[in-house]
Image (cartoon, rainbow, N blue to C red; front, side):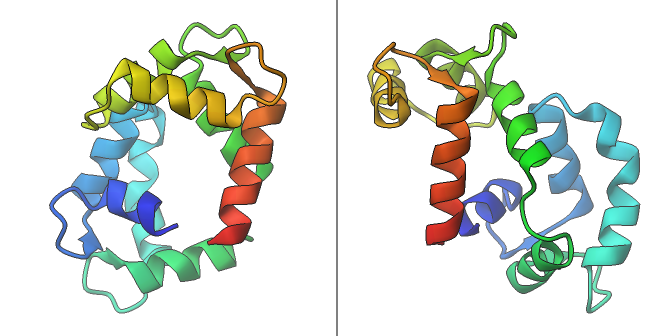
Length: 139
């Protein structure tokens, strides 16, 4: 969860601003949710300082019941750029690049191989779900 928080906190000041939150939504092609950001901040910003710190971020996850299946599916579709139900190393490279991450194609291939249980060279929804739920439980 800290890695997710850190993606939102682009200036690394330990808190998420509404602008940072909106930038992540734009980067993952979720512009339709931008109008909900003030509402999200009213709920999550417990100390009323206008920002969401890591503690507040974690509290919001607990209130919402944590990451839901639909959230994981939404993350999958963010990476599945061509909508074929499979995530390739090229798609990982493009999405990470849009989020400002520097990653080589070989690193992306390693990421896919680490999750690819059936050895077909891509990540399907089941493999992605398994990886996400295992990762979230270990945090």
